[in-house]
Length: 539
Image 1 (cartoon, rainbow, N blue to C red):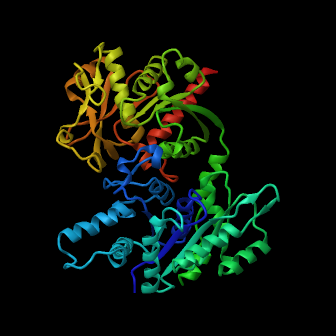
Image 2: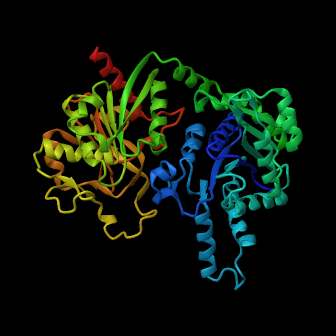
Image 3: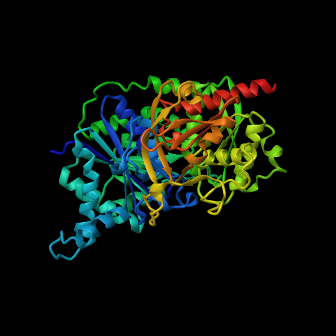
């Protein structure tokens, strides 16, 4: 018998239907019933991981505690389940093939011809079973990226088919997410795309147990019967997933549709207890009934694609709910920001966040944003490159170190206040070679960071190559910018802040990666609180 039950979530008709949100919502409901649940994502692209992908290609790159660069859906898994993920939670076609080819080069296949079946499918199955064999989880949910019918997805679907046969149907379950489009001209929902999608899945040898139908309108009971009849599922296993006001409504909507009950029934699992989602409802109550409202400028160079900053956006939602405040984000493209337009962009904002990123494009605009926030006492928060921008701006305009720079932008600067870390100087490969994952940080007693966290020792997740140059630290601290967070082993500066400012904090790490519904990140909570205070004082 396997040590865990396995749920596979596939999708059809179109991408971006919300497999990650459905997986997370189901995981939350099962978790709230007393089951131990984890979720993993199988991505069909050939990159080893998303670490080298442009954010325009794939949204943000999410980083786990153990230093894996992963798909942004892992952020949803963590935000909903409130438990960390690992390298094992995100597998790509590239990693599967890399593992198989490495074994082949080592002679592991004894000279046999290496083929998609069985070698690639066996490696997919091995990775799928890894989390279930740890003994930590009762249920493993596996989201298969892309759409049924994609060439890239075929080996994954074949692996799922084999696992269904090998483990048995009471040990595995397939949920297929599909679309019921609404034709405005005829004022009706259409089931044919769903039927074709299920037909394609059946051609891969897989019959779905449950259908989750994305829709803009309620599904009439006669249409549910039609879908059940033509897709060979029980009527009560046709689940309506209607467009929601917020993704955080989806667990409650899935509970109303009894998705968790259907899953437990199919897997022959006991209904241990009714799901305890009171804390989730409390969060939603605060989210939907704010007592105040602020506008925060998010300055970045990928603002055309909000998914590039997905975790930051969600962190604002968590922190906003904690403060009973609606946070409006003003997206500001750093390339379009200059000294002349600065007041136009920031005239009505209550706080400014300078976002992470890489490269010189838009760098000057970020420096201008920092300067405006510092000189006008507007709450400021800089993350990763945003923190480095704060350091460069302070060096140029307060310390008067002309042409101070990061060596990422100017290798010949006389004042390299941000420099390549020593450990990165011999690195030539790009993928998976940055300073990645969780590192410890000690906070300075009496600092703003210390007061925000309420403790001295913390750990946060990193993804960078450049760092504060400690040769300049004494000059900075004498002028009022202090290093309030230091890595205890390497002495690298992890947090900077300015005294006598309402909120001026820069962090080298990515706090947005640890913010969850039930545990909003304290830096975001206090940043939103500072924005509320600033907003009130303006009036």
